[in-house]
Amino acid sequence: MKIPQKGMSKDDIFERLGDYRSRDLDWQSGRVFGYIFDPGPEVRDVAKEAYGMFLTENGLDFTAFPSLLRLENELVGMMRHHLNGDEQVVGNFTSGGTESIMLAVKSARDYFRAKKPQIKEPEMILPATAHAAFHKAAHYLGVRVVQVPVAPASYKADVKAIAEAIGPNTILIVGSAPSYTHGVIDPIREMAALALEKEILFHCDACVGGFMLPYFRRLGASVPEFDFSVPGVTSISVDLHKYAYAAKGASIILYRNKNIRRYQIFACSHWTGYTVVNNAVQSSKSGGPMAAAWAVINYIGDEGYLEFARKKLEATRKVVEGIEQIDGLRILGKPEMCLVAFTSDDLNVFHIIDEMNSKGWYIQPALSYGNSPRHIHMSINVSNVNWIDQFLSDLAGAVEKARQSKSDESSEQLRQMISSIDFSSMSEEDFASMLQLAGIDGEALPERMADINEIMDFLSPEIREQLLVEYVNNLFA
Ligand SMILES: Cc1ncc(COP(=O)(O)O)c(C=O)c1O
Image 1 (tube, rainbow, N blue to C red):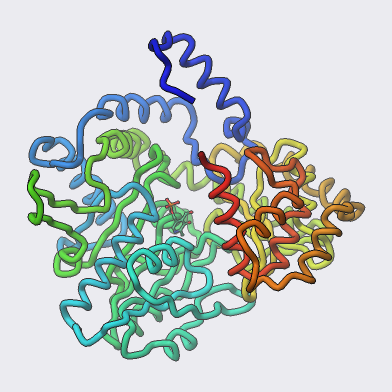
Image 2 (image 1 turned 90 degrees about the vertical axis):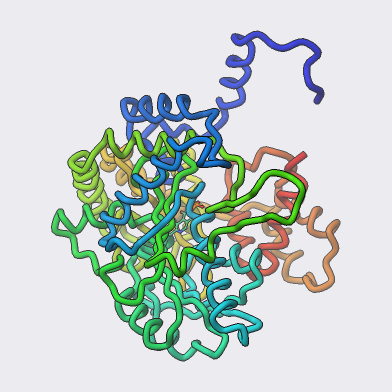
């Protein structure tokens, strides 16, 4: 690939882009239960217009672009109010849940570096259901993860196990409202009380739920407390690019007060160039995502979101009841928002997914980990609500088909190979040939993924991670 000698025409460019996109997940079909939070064409147009309007403005310097400072402060103000914060609560706009979480962990680390310099190897306590972004933050920031199992039937954080895991190096406890995996809300009040008592910081990860849960509560759903009304909650992440329907690249990180947020901010005068002071991870950044988020929230408004929540609540209840009625399927935990996880004790769920994929549905596979079995995950959205009956009928059909599926020969071969492998001495080449044998070679994944998922499920998390790294290292140019 080379830069073209002469610039292409606009028509050619958009034709090419359209073609590249033609093999993507068809998110406009209403059959996709993940990745996409689509509010429909009208709101999407508002987002696009605002994004385009601020495409070029640079968040690197909010003194040069006071419009961005104002947009950010207004968004933070709205989220502070939405999540019951008082006037002490402060926050910032970030590019997504992961960046918000990274910043919360960095702030906790640096807060304790200042307050308790005797802590040399800081630790944070994560229930097994805490999002992978916390592991990433730990990895990037040199914080040790102390992971504790969640309660077996509810999949909620186990407060007693957390209390036992607290040690002299603990700086942060994390809870989710709700967890992505099972869509259940951790006992935030009890967890935060424990943190308060032990003088540890507590982060509530409300990335996926923080925006919608207050609306679900207003509609009469039972939503346990999770926000700044709970003493001991010191930071909350809430994504706007999920159930607030903003364009991607939009999240808010909130702190109980400026004394904690101070440790998020990075300033550098140790170089020859312009003065650097960043309130988040990114330096130069488009004003587009922030303007789009501001525009979408103001456009949909409180009543609009309540109506979205009503539709999702109804659809989720229907999905849960429908799945419970299908012989062989079982819901994991009791979903408290619009995220649903279900499994089967006698069928291979990965075959069910393949059957559903072949009918144009996207539902997400999840491997077993700790006390959470391999399962299927669905994030239910407004774009899905008119498709639920069709979904449930196709799901019942897919379950019947999955009863008849059996693994093919190559996966049997691979499984045999796996049981004879000493993973501790595997080279990069061994991993590469394993991937090849599994049919994972080049860009396109095989159409049917059940066997690959089953094999991944059979491997330890460490080996899964190594395989994934090899796969991605080969995939990208
Ligand atoms: C609970 C929770 N936390 C964090 C994240 C990470 O968010 P992002 O993908 O925006 O980085 C997600 C994403 O689904 C999530 O559900």
